[in-house]
Image (cartoon, rainbow, N blue to C red; front, side, top):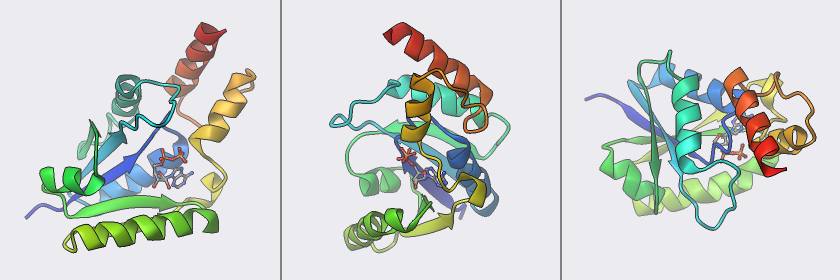
Length: 162
Ligand code: ADP
């Protein structure tokens, strides 16, 4: 049976830190489904469709990576996709407490689904979508933090919002 993992997140927008986790995950699992959470309680910069498009573009060289979006409970989505694993990235101790809680609740909801944590690549340990947005908002370069196409999309977004 093929091993399928879901890599969930907001990806608002995708950064080089995300891409690193996705690429490494795709070496371990037969298929990785990157799932953009459609979270109505958060006010995102990019729409779900825009985030999906950017992810598709930056992962187009990875044949076993699929991009999708989902609503509702992650564990229901994982089961719907016949996946057996969830991949999460860990940047710092501060990520740990929340992720531990999520992994525990997901195990309680379905003990057949395993959560795998991947340690961030050291060069991206400080990197988050929020940091990138904060920098891009003030027109400073983010070329070392996100793929080129995302930098362009950020510029477009902030020009549009001005
Ligand atoms: P954020 O908005 O904080 O960047 P997301 O919800 O989009 O986070 O994150 C999706 C997943 O990617 C999470 O598991 C998160 O821990 C992981 N992740 C985000 N940035 C990095 C990074 N720089 N290194 C490793 N993992 C990361």
